[in-house]
Length: 253
Image (cartoon, rainbow, N blue to C red; front, top):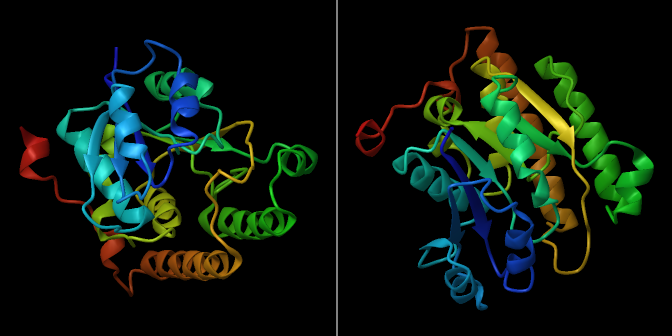
């Protein structure tokens, strides 16, 4: 059986962490690692009480930087499959075994949880209308530019094989929210198979969400990264985020 690790990039998640963790079917993963990005609440204490492996950032470094720590720690532990679950209870973590099976059966290298099976479901689940429209525009643009056919390029429920994490140069990505877009575009560049499955989603006050100005910034940076990908394909330009990752000494052990 593949060694499976769930990683949780956390910031002020004390009100939702336990519910998220309890949703992960017992025995479906080998370890849960929570990386806390200098939360101001009791996220760390609660994670330790739940028996999670806890890594703390001394200062807030950003969502992308948090994921970088998540993946470093998972690779150090020789994970075969890594699943990112936001600890804000927005995504249905009961589907973790499904994500594992898709990768274990070699159907996909990357599997995403799509929040948008239908417009009605997405809006009924509480997704703000402007976020839905922005998602549809960006996802359509990315599918056309990248040659994919995904339902939701911007989900926070993702799973990767170790090969993906050892190949994609994610350390060179932004420490901010655009990290997610950069990672998927890099995965396309390196020829990995990306798929998605529908995942029920919950929007409520405690669930994490970026505001409108940061959403606009995220969208612009996503479009810029797609542009870099297209320029890289011409072989007239080279960008560091599309150069193969160097395996660290810790990962070679």
